[in-house]
Image (cartoon, rainbow, N blue to C red; front, side, top):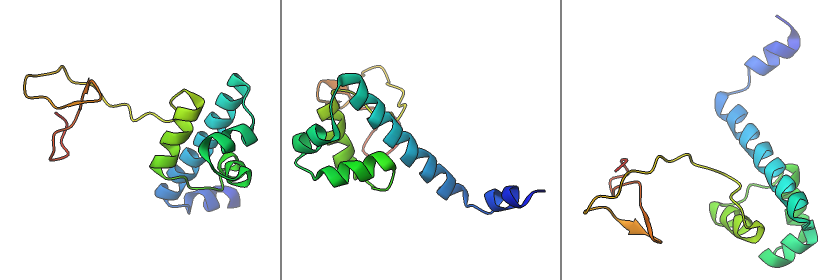
Length: 111
């Protein structure tokens, strides 16, 4: 086995997944910005954040909160991440959130 492969094998699975998601998020935000013709500065202004923070998000160096991710999605007018939740058919006892069936019950289990 090569030295490089040994190094890769030594990286914990959580770290691999985190880096993959972080860079994927950054690439998707950059792609959406380009698609709609918005600059980093314009996104920063819409969010009330510093342009340097947006630069760190786009380089994968920032760790935005879920709230900030949601703010970015609203500013871009598009989802950046997906949880791939399977929507259940609404039942009479289903909880409706923002006009849509909420896919989980209050125990955290899928409805």
